[in-house]
Image (cartoon, rainbow, N blue to C red; front, side):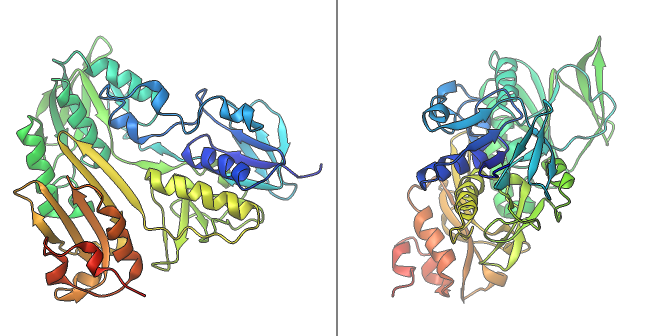
Length: 417
């Protein structure tokens, strides 16, 4: 074996971006991308947003057009994932039994929906949400309206799907373990802001509450029994209680694991010539000096680029400020920063929640007069994330009075050389 191949295990955004970057960086050797799905790599954010709502078509979700792989001599094997790794011999066994060698291997196997062992979980009409096929199926169930939808999970995906279901004219009840939705991520004040938005649009909440059983008739779901004994009528039940990193392939190579595959800032794992990127990677971030596993698309996009450069022995590090966004009803939100540094910290607000357009900033250690920004969330405001990211990465103390004054341009607060 010549071991020249760059092998990518995982057909999502991180994997496809890595393949694209290998070619754009001038690598001319063999590149093989292994995908578990029969569909070419696609973007996940539209699945719970514009595609689910019928505002974007199927052609809008691929990472690159279908013809790109052949045009750039990238071997794309659909429906044929990697099943095992022999790190010593640098080979991977595929589902169809074939063995491929590699010079460098990128594990980009993503994550899988967390499942709850509930009575009735296998009834027709009960589903998790992760794939393109899930989005197609849910759209077909929701689009005519008039259904009873029970959403189990009050995180970002649960809230997005609740908004989509309600926008189609369905009755929606959302269950969550938190007293306030999203409060673990953004705190109680902002969590209540999102809750009020949903209630204004007709979503009902049961918080804190959990599902104790799913009931059905003739094999189809008919209701959800809560831990309080209430039975909620249901034609559709969506379980959205988070995801778990898919480390099954990494385990076969004996890689170091802890909430995903442990990798350094260049995305190198504990085994030579094996990297990990995307949802499955728990990467060391230079900003915090801690490992972070992010499940958002920007991490997969940037991680794919960094992994490819590391595979080519270039100096690269995943040092960008994490970013994600959400669209719910008329609300558009963007968030940059480090959630691990915001726990228990009350945000400071620039603008007004009552006006529906504002920025929330989290300061390191909850500093009150002057401090470093570690996260910033903009709601219904455009073109502010670039200076927000610069404030975070600059690590320069800012005057909080000026930070929260909407008349002071954010650019004036940035560090100057």
